[in-house]
Image (tube, rainbow, N blue to C red; front, side):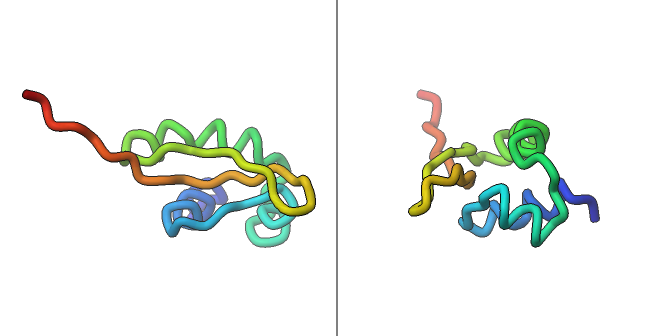
Length: 72
């Protein structure tokens, strides 16, 4: 399983990830680049990648399920 696969699985569970936590858990050196790489895969599965700021001011990334509307 690649680092990108591990990040995708982690985000699918509704968790958020900061650069420091990604480095320690998955050995990801550049989380921003990894998020850019995995965004198309998550979006094709119906997730939106969201960016937020943590309590200490760090950037955190997460994925939320997107509801789709039925065509009329």
